[in-house]
Image (cartoon, rainbow, N blue to C red; front, side, top):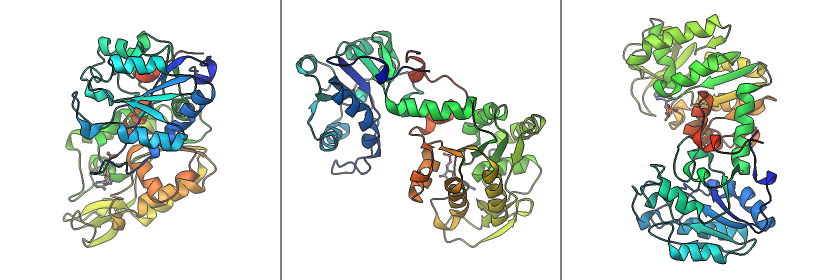
Length: 395
Ligand code: AMP
């Protein structure tokens, strides 16, 4: 178990918190989706209530290691002030930390909040530069990591800083570790993983790790066609990762050898082109016409997947079942989301596209946990140690 802000005394202490304020900003500098700011509020509010002197930090976008006011965190400061009902003092510095920033941190009183400028104005941030870690650490007495989305990166603000300050987690990371950790290490069974999306290579390490842990594994989405190819099926113009065909075969064999129920789509919706309005129809998975591409799973697959979902007690889902961004190929992804929403199981959405899909369908509230980090949750499911979590003290 990792220590959280609740396990230490923060009253009157300067506490520096790594948040994930990597929000989308429009051309006029307005935040178009405040989900990440809102997600960070429970930890910040707790610190405020406890009388801590709270210093927040985050990256946003890719300013390439140099100051670029297109990526200033000013809009985040405004949004925080509005949500908190108190001013989040923003001290914008091209070097993130300087004398004025240090003085502002010194002046903070218990219950006050300040925000640093975009961490990626400094190239040392993503290089985990020791000097920058020290500069950040010098502002505070305690370090809190609450940015799960960057926990898989060893950066100055996510890992390096913990060499100089006692490190604990915030409530967001606590929740991620609880749900993802329990799902993999101590799940209510049967444990089902549903993997989809287009990039087979990204998911292979996940499949390898999960084969030893899950009771059932569903492979859908673009990935399935590489498995079909490995089985000798005609896949027409469907997306294929040629290099992974051999591995797909051995993964399927390894799963079956471990007694894992290994489930692929049995039918697909195949179209003449990668276009929402292209002529499309259903066919069995082993009968895809040579001039068509499979862009969604078909009704028989939906029925099959739904029946497997109904039996599961823990479900982890990462990756859409089809090209869900195009309405004519979203039915499979919607059906999986609906089946999960209707289930009593612990339901976990592994970030990225599946999280976007679930929110788009308005089913977010029905899931036990939606991970805030696509890449980080995948690495977690691969069984890898995330640097930003490894640095947090154990209880
Ligand atoms: P990934 O980043 O690997 O999770 O892939 C997500 C993307 O996979 C989404 O943008 C989907 O549109 C895409 N996708 C899902 N199914 C298919 C398919 N059958 N063919 C092509 N792309 C797909």
